Length: 278
Length: 173
Image (cartoon, rainbow over all chains, first blue to last red; front, side):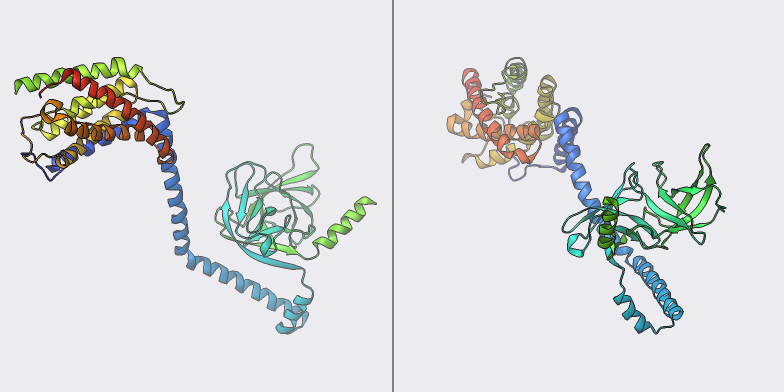
């Protein structure tokens, strides 16, 4: 009689079956183009969603770290507020009132959900959009410097022109000296450095001088520290410096950022247009 | 016993040659993408005697499938389908088991078991083979409809030829 109740009467048969099917499957995905493509695409799909979820889970592990960093930033801001109150001779409650009355900037806290740094023109994505008050052409700052300028906004998401983008040009000045120029990225693939241009060559520059935002654009408030000068040179035939600036902000690690909303932008813009049309 | 061995050897060679030389050249395509492949060689491994050792059944099915694959330049498709069908065979045999059980020395042929039994046995297992084959050929469950249509068309035409061959040869074992 047949071994009636079992498909695989022995373990050996099962193993043989699996081995033979394994060989067949291997042959299919190795020597048939169409099947190989489908196989690799599927693997990518699966591993992609796994990476995504893993990143989500990993973000919980760094919660403590992120919390500490946010707390530090908060403390710094509070200290500045108190110092300002002291300087103005006000109590901190009065200062709050005064700040509300003369509010120039507001910040929207956002999470960076996508960030490229390896391309020639890099972009970021933020998890908030028009609903949160974000509009086109607003500055985006991080904890230790600036990140970029908003480019396209929809209801819930924003695309940001990274500072590592050939179209981005930031108005920056040398701290305490006041000379200002433009901070650009030279497309050289190194995301630790940017270049400060248009500083006249008669200006005494020392290595280690700090660079901050100038406040001449409506995008960023003045005085945000960006980095320090690590190298200076004057290109042959040029009348301006080419200064290498080491950034404080590590763009490879940003998770949270702030969009700067300037309440004066509309007024300034209309004024600018008026002047231009005259 | 020696007769069965001889019979099976001849049958295997004959069916493989028939498959590779004739039927593989006839890819019928009257319906655009839903072409029909005529697949008759499963008959060779499905007619193996009941007493054939299980390992040997798997290896033979794999070898035959691979031979057809190499001729069709579709490595892995028929070998996978053949081994899978071979794994299903005992289930179908159990479902179709006659009252007295099977004689270990016999083979599941038309002459031994008459038409209704043989028709169910052969049509189910050839369906398994062809379904597996087209699933692996299309290789994505997204085109389940395409798989199903190709399978049913090829299954129908293949079975016509399988029964024709079986009636012409009509072996006892």
